Image 1 (cartoon, protein in one colour):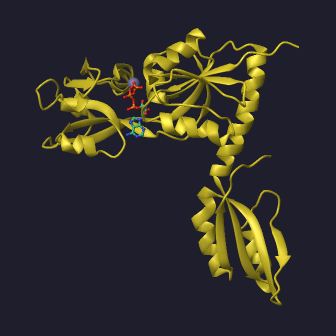
Image 2 (cartoon, protein in one colour):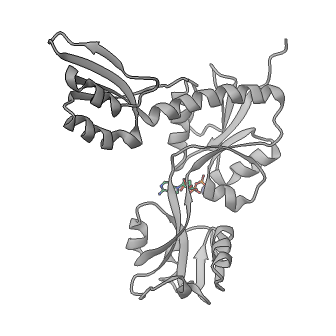
Image 3 (tube, protein in one colour):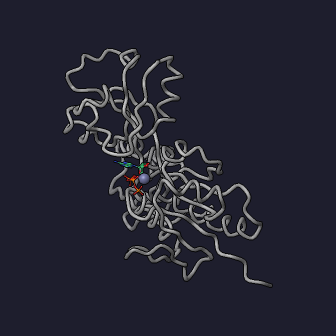
Amino acid sequence: MPQSENLRIAIQKSGRLSEDSISLFKECGIKLEAGKGRLKSESPNFQAEFLFLRDDDIPGYVEDGVADLGIVGENVLIESAKSVEVIKKLGFSKCRLSLAVPREVDYVDHTYFDKKNIATSYPKLLGKYLADNNLNAQIHEISGSVEIAPSIGLADAVCDIVSSGSTLLSNGLKEVEVIFKSEAVFIGNTSLSDSKKAILEKLLFRINAVQRAQNNKYILLNAPNDKLKEIISFLPGMKSPTVMPLATEGWSSVHSVLEESEFWENIEALRSAGAEGILVIPIEKMIY
Ligand code: ATP
Ligand code: ZN
């Protein structure tokens, strides 16, 4: 049987997506060498090769089939208007696209933006927001350092990516509207060959196991036997919790898996029901 081709996966060469993209594949047990000005790297233990590119170029390369798959921010993907398949949200590089105005503006609501001049690198996303809100504003497209536009008289407001807001603050701006929330997404070419689809299936199986593990915690606790029933009711578990007798008479050790989101809420309930010595341990992989 002929050796099937490698999956070609485009990731950001250097920037805010790079580290988490590389870690994702490493956590999936896929070795790759990155850095040192490398443009391409073939994995020695998985049928994949990685292309290191500027994030803005990734949707286009995936649409054209130069790359089969890619990781990019949803903001860049939508702005690119390329036709690719969104395979999976990845939960990292979370940020928001927001409108910001000079600090001294007495901002009441979004009608402020009517007839204003707004600087942005995201004309499509901003245009959609303005149209959805019946606002008639001028979009001034610039490719970088958007946040200085108001102070040099280029615009009345900006629409830019924010994570902590400190860049806005240091440029005398305040965030007033969030217009889009973004995270990294895994995208794919819409006509992958069957052999590439088969490798993608293997990859997704691993990514799902890693993501599930990241969203869950392994929990161990000691419970007095007369409170076991109540304590177990707070531990949904994958099937049902494991209960083992402790050497101390009348006590058991209970093991289960909890979703991160249910975590704090249940910890409180468990403690008040009499659970002691609660240990919470990260899970590396979770296979169903
Ligand atoms: P490139 O040189 O590859 O074009 P860039 O400067 O355009 O890089 P980065 O600043 O590395 O891009 O951001 C890449 C993506 O990471 C953004 O498109 C966005 O989705 C996300 N992002 C941007 N800013 C932040 C932030 N402060 N925190 C988290 N994620 C962010
Ligand atoms: Zn970019």
